[in-house]
Each structure stands twice: as structure tokens, then as C-alpha cells.
Length: 243
Image 1 (cartoon, rainbow, N blue to C red):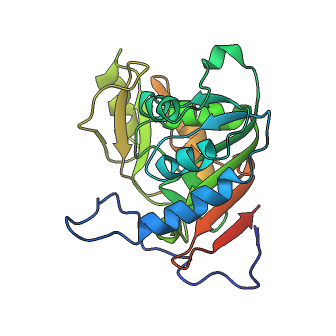
Image 2 (cartoon, one colour):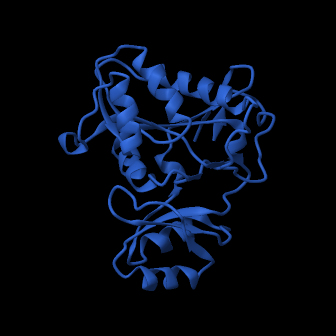
């Protein structure tokens, strides 16, 4: 991984990933960090591109920044929520079955390791997000510094078929603790599960999960998918991290 800094940026490592919302009446400084990363990502998009739109709170800042550039784009959304916001902003959102490749995809992450492994899926859209990332020539990840971790840890989101769900969950639990998430089914009709076991080797765990019947997809994204990570800082600057 390379960076525009000679040393790891202050606050690179986090002891974990928080999904807590902002405290009522208190402005969350992470929103400015997310916005800085999102606005930098919008500048990476060029006129005429096909763009994959991720899902989540950081992408919620990216969409208006992208729309403000008034480019001629074709966009693919990874969730109904993203599609609704993008269309409201005037972005041209098309069904993914009309495109066989994308120029760039932009999305957030729940964890970014020092080796650029990602954990995604806090919003439950990780399977579609991975399909979109894999179809893009460039995959740009936008995060605030609290998402940077020394190594990947739990939870790892999974999307599991409803058919045979108890049997699939039993197989997963043979490796580590896992619980069905208290959440609606995914847009593709599947069940969200969070794997809470340790992740000493994300590559091995990813391979095992991918080979487990009934597991539609998991939230481990390998470094090979990542082209650029943009980390917004409290002062509005952005660190650029590359493999």
C-alpha cells in the first residue's frame, strides 16, 4: 500500500468499528470527514463515465457532490435507498442489466485494514456492492479515519439464502459464532447474518465462506478489488491510499 504521506497518518489504527449513530444535539465530526472523502471521490469521475454508486452514510455525501458536477453519466445503484437518493438529485440511474462494465465504482467501508482488506455490509448491501466493484475498472473507497484498522475483525456481514437457512447457519457456526441480523430481507430476498468469529486470515475465511452452499456472499473484499482509498480528515484534507 502506498500513501501520499511518508508515515502512516495519525489515527490510522482503530481498535474496532463503530456503527453508532450521532448523539442527539451533538454534531458528529465524522460527517465532515466523510464529506471531504466523498467530494474528493466526485472529482475522480469524468464526463461520459458509467459509475457504480455504493450504499451507506459516506455515499450519501458522495451523491450530491457528484450531482453538483452536472456530468453526463450512466449510474448503477447498489440499493433501493441509493437509487432513490440518486434519482432525486437528477443522476441518470439505469438497471445494471443494461451495462456489462463500469468505469468506476465508489463506496464506503466498515473496516479498512493496513493491507487494504475491506469489511463491508453494515448496510446489508455487500453482495450487490461486490458485484458492482468487480465490474468497475476502478473501485474507489471513501471513509473517515475511524474505519482504519490494523487488521480485520468481527463482525463480518453475510448474505444467506432463506432456503435451508438453519442448515447453512449451522455450517457457519461450526467455524465461529454467527447470528441472524434483526433486519429486513435483502432486495434479493436473502437473510443477513453477522459472523462474530475471529479473522486471523481474511483470505482463508473468504475462500471458505465463498465455498459454503447457501452463503450468497460475504463482506470481505480483497485488496485486489481496491484501486484507491480516500480518507477524509477533520481539517478537510484527504489522504490517498493505494495498493
